[in-house]
Length: 370
Image 1 (cartoon, one colour):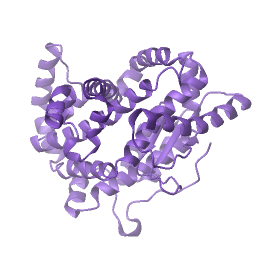
Image 2 (cartoon, rainbow, N blue to C red):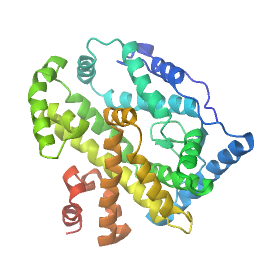
Image 3 (cartoon, one colour):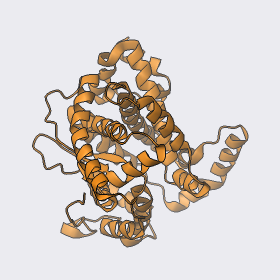
Image 4 (cartoon, rainbow, N blue to C red):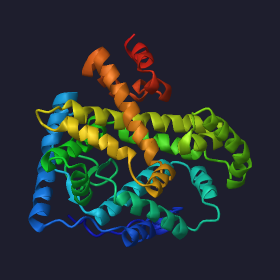
């Protein structure tokens, strides 16, 4: 289950500057990460074999439901342990940020401003703390910027076997059903990026725009903080607390909010579409899908106080809301215009829903389908 040993790019390597040392991030995460569950050898080997097989079968089912990517090669995902996921995630994040920042030196300077007072190693330690926490939670991931090693496929599908086994045990659901269910979600993400040629570059360009707009210094951000906190308290008193994402948005300039809206809309669509598809495949493939969905939804809400605080600070709760909002958008559009009508979202970047359209899908239907 281990990934190939590798060294990540470091700041200054090959003449490049990076504000974050990804090697330090990986080393920190691996050192702090908790070990996975104790699993008998036979059970572990079965889990690995099943996940590899299901990752191929799942994509076939996803293609049948979505109508996407029928001509693409279908290859097995990589089954990994927690440290290997950290290595893979760091590679993907380094590639994503490099792609987003590659086109403008001014952009790099603005990012450097954001890291003022932090060395690349200090930033790496902080990133490692995040990766250590997420490394014990993430079930799977499609990294569109990773190396698959397969002709005709870009990106890398990672399935974190220890976390999948731990979650399945916690939920008390059939092991094979749960493994297939997870594979359906991640295979949908792989298909989204590989069946839609422009999506990968569009996402990195959108992130680049967001970073380019981050021109405020830390001092300027702090100068706005008192007003932000007053707005947050007012919202909370009205039972509409903005949460961490809301506070971040209140700190931003109007241009930054527009750029963030674009990223959030894309991410919400991708996550919600995958959540819809994994259930739409249905009980014919995953007999206990209704039970899994019900228990998994409750699990997303759970955790102790510290876990809930960390989830909020790291944006995990915002991610969970994305699943629900994006899935609701997908269901509504599919119910109204069918999967073929929904697939208009993949025609061009202009056909993607805006953040406001995610919450009001009929407005997207009227704009695209008349």
